[in-house]
Image (cartoon, rainbow, N blue to C red; front, side, top):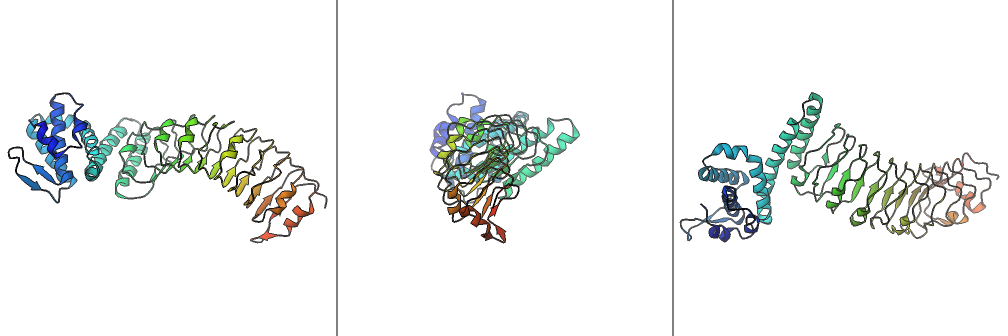
Length: 392
């Protein structure tokens, strides 16, 4: 039996992870693993028979670590069948222990996590009987295993998956994007990768935005268009790094009382908004707002959004517009509404590249606005007025 004192001498960071386990054969097993992890991560090992003996390990690889660990376990627990039966659980225990050992254990931790993912994926593939569904999962498994060996974004899109394995928190800690678009998902696994910077769940069957998303605190881009969401959660305010949200083509009628403060690209087109919620005015970093194809009858004052450059409010029911827009505006689309008059201040927007008022009810255009038809950007007039009844 391995003595706790000697293990503590070489694995002080690991000991707290072991302490909660009861005095049992499982705890003995975990102490044995802790001993090997200490050996691998600290580069030195104290022999239990001679405290004075020290062996430096300069080339102790994860493969050697696993081999050594299981050799010791087999020696201490002759019932090898039991160890084989509990292999996946044992690997998870090893991973959890290694995670407590600090940076020195990262190589070991990645190795164990890969083994855990491989076993979990095999179980996930074997859970289905239908050949078609199994083929989809096998393809997903092949893609996931490849992620351990490259720095590409994680792409599981367009596989027709209805569920996912709970393995993403075991993946390498890379700042990466996860693409789950074009599947049949209604929920996400309980655990997600904490270091994800992008998540795409477009074109699925979500009715609510899964709350486990908020655990990915570094998330910058969140896309969930073409789902069945009727509301957005209040916890979005806690996503401090979030810059881009694509909520197009859902069934949204309102927004949370507070929005992520650093949003710069917000897409809520093709929903059921009748008014543009005033909390939009709090988004001081907003550069692009797409609220087209809704049922908007008016817009709030947007002059306070100093960074706004692009607004698309086409295909609504707008009859009037804000008197002023932010000075940095470059692209404005108010086509296919019921607008009767263009505010004079729009003619003073110096950076304007496109001002689209096609298919409205405009009968008269002030000279300050009409002059924009003479200005061209990339060969196209800045002002477009086709489909109106202007008198000029």
